[in-house]
Length: 134
Image (tube, rainbow, N blue to C red; front, side, top):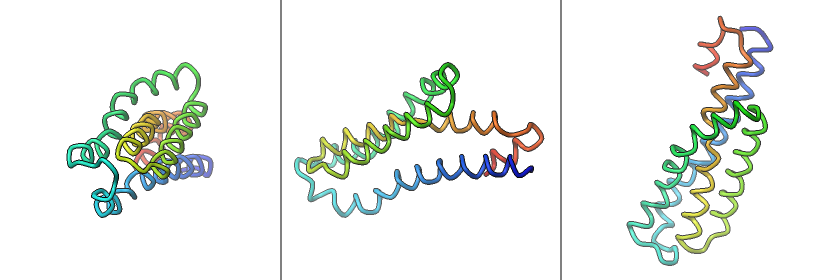
């Protein structure tokens, strides 16, 4: 891989990795904290954990289409802003409903497909498989 391909690949992979870290870091803490949250029931706790995946699944294709129309980087920035807003909502929430809303916002920043498309855009075809592996 060329230096340009490596730089682009590792920059995009870092964005993806930090986003995944921010997403999954809640899991070990949430299991200990969940019973202390106001209005929490087992069902609402499950919804709080699962709503992220649902909103992300629903919006992946939408973000992919939007990135084709508006460009990759603006959509990635928009998705990261949504993720940050969702994280702030979760951090400031005192009820399970606030956490559900925050997790839904985090999932709404569905930039996985856009990051993958950006990797394909910025790497040479012969290096694309290596870049996608990273």
